Image 1 (cartoon, rainbow, N blue to C red):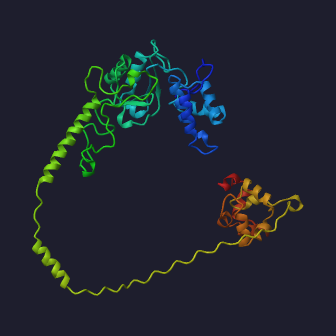
Image 2 (image 1 turned 60 degrees about the horizontal axis):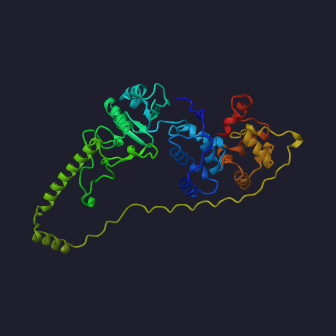
Image 3 (image 1 turned 135 degrees about the vertical axis):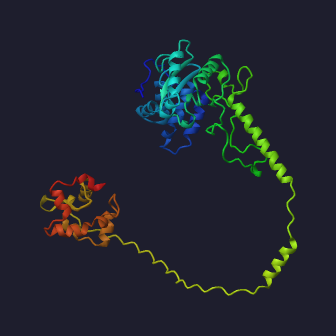
Length: 411
């Protein structure tokens, strides 16, 4: 991916329209005070839609002021995500071609070659008529429908050289286009049709058992590409789109299943032999109750009550090390430079101080450390007693030999 930079030529200013500004303020109000930066992505997207499909430098500054963010923070977001265009794009379509491995294996290089021959030789260049531009991007998230492109908010999947050329022709001619798979399949369904969830539930009440169907009424969602591309529905010449053909097949199959279910429901249920059933019930009622078996299992022991929390007691502390020479507390396992500095701030400089802590003192110190439970877990008291008596521990020997990186002991 190329380094993303702002366009050399920029407009003098940017401001939301009154309608967009009202929308932006309503969005910002969703977040608590001090968290309004969470709205930066939708605001940048709305600015891009208002500004003919690209984000200008004045727009970045405008949004930074609106959200009370440093300009550089908004710039970082705008330059990180390829969904934001940083220079002018084609008026009818800016085509983003996925070039990641699945799409490449399925023919994205052919789509890029078409972009180079029909739109412009290089990415981000605008076609001679000003209507189109293109770029190669990383994964667009529909690998099963590879190869695919994204045009503003919409994706067009399962493309071939012919269907991609036809898509460009339709957009150029002002024909209506339908997002989604371009080979007739529904979403990511197997190309041969539905293979699971084929049973009809009575709760569907005659509706298709799918949350949503691309029925040819889908519309390209960008508002700044011209009314012609936003029409949705059928092709310009009245020929049904591949998506419409697929939906027609689904509806026909669903109707066929409904007919079969109706036939099944119309068949009378076999009569049950009520006399035999009554005899079984009477026999069961006369049968004497059997004594319940006595369990030989031992009763479960009640769980022991949780240990009461140890009360805290402040240990004896020092304002400074005795003689101005503190012990090297990093010889205690689990103590690094940062933790040693914290212990000094609390007034602990020597091994004998640590060795004298009881449970109450440990609880007091532990509550003031970032890493709770470390004192007992790493055995500070036992180590400190040995070191205070002049002996060494295995860990202190390694520290003296330089075999332990003290910064790692605090991980």
